[in-house]
Picture 1 (spheres, one colour):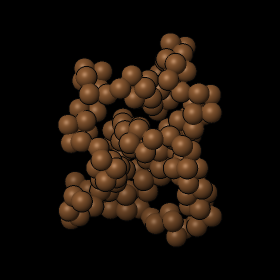
Picture 2 (picture 1 turned 135 degrees about the horizontal axis):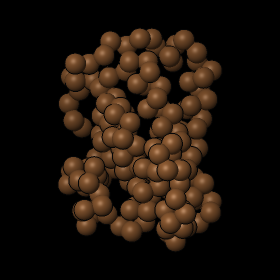
Picture 3 (picture 1 turned 60 degrees about the horizontal axis):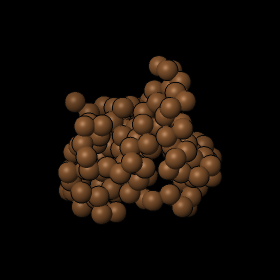
Length: 153
């Protein structure tokens, strides 16, 4: 059952919303592959249980050429051979940063990221993970739900 929105945070505090948009703008212009960014956003949203963001980012992933198979298998990416080593490193980092209270960020996960991404790219990846986690928390806390009546594009 979809939640009833608790508030329209965009209208309640436009400056806060603009700050989030600036973070998103940075992530989108960071130079990281947009397909990778949508995988990261989708995986974090799965972990956080954010229906609104899952709906948005699976749609955007498809628009960026992502396949249905890779989207369906994302929840079990470790067992699926359809992701590159760089994507796997990014997904592992996404999981540990999203669930950071469990075990922090293990050295092995961070070292694996550094095999595939420069320091600048690693910071951009961390910003992407943190930004989607912030969006997830805003959406969940304010009661946003996935629009059930929108057709898949």
